[in-house]
Length: 394
Image 1 (tube, rainbow, N blue to C red):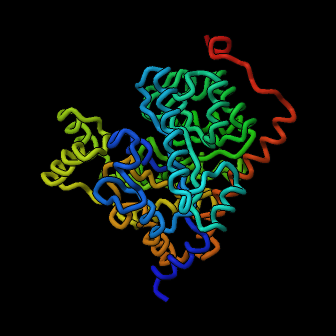
Image 2: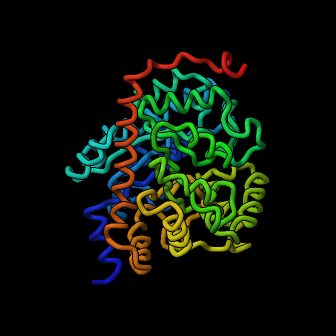
């Protein structure tokens, strides 16, 4: 049996639970959430990285849809936009019921797999989405959000981002309360995008396993968005999972400087560097044609996974591609149909079927189930927190 066939056979039994996909934001930017104008039931190559046929081809059985909104939105507008993102995920699962199932629990993930449907979960990307309100946090959980990334590219008033100037040097008192309340709810604390100090602080106080929804190894590519080895080494004791991302500027050292220049070019043309609409991509591809970018490959991603397995152990790894949240992708991982190529590369490197089953499916289901179990215990001990940012940090 060739490796690619082996990979596809393995994914048929142990499909990928991917930690991060920004299709909902793409639907907002391209078609203002009009699902008739961008029908993911048919191939949308050239417009998105994601649609149902390619999810099927990629062996994806569970997808955390990012309900991302920009951190520079005014606070009230950020909450509204997050609710709109949640709404479109609900509408997707209601429209495409033959293929998608809304998943709120680990049992829902397993049920979706048994039904041959793709479990659809939600993760809020950035604590700005709660506007410093634990009540808003609880309402997001009630609407189905099962992780929240504590920051995006900018600090929140209560936590430091990896890509901003340090302010709290980790979490403030209110930031600690956010983590505690997330643990009480059963919402995974996502430490992608946060500073290394915030990672360590959150792990120090966490009462449940944490998640890195889309971050790779800093020792392999020295980018602040990646996870230092000392933090990876803390995951076994915590029970958390680090989901390796595919974004070239985070995984390939040679791509870092190139990306800074490409981002500057985007701004000169009036686009945000993270814009992946067709007009923005025309500018990106023109820049790339004039100055070819250093190309990450499937092997680049596998290098990160090899290292992360050595440090954290295979029981603490997953995959978080960040499709539709990045302008560029590695060769062989151009869209969500590419996962078999990565699994084949890992098979070539000697990863066992049992290792790969943990990577693709079992670890993600386990971390969600463990967060649920911790929440049962914590809810028996304490009531919903009424702490405020002003009272704790003001």
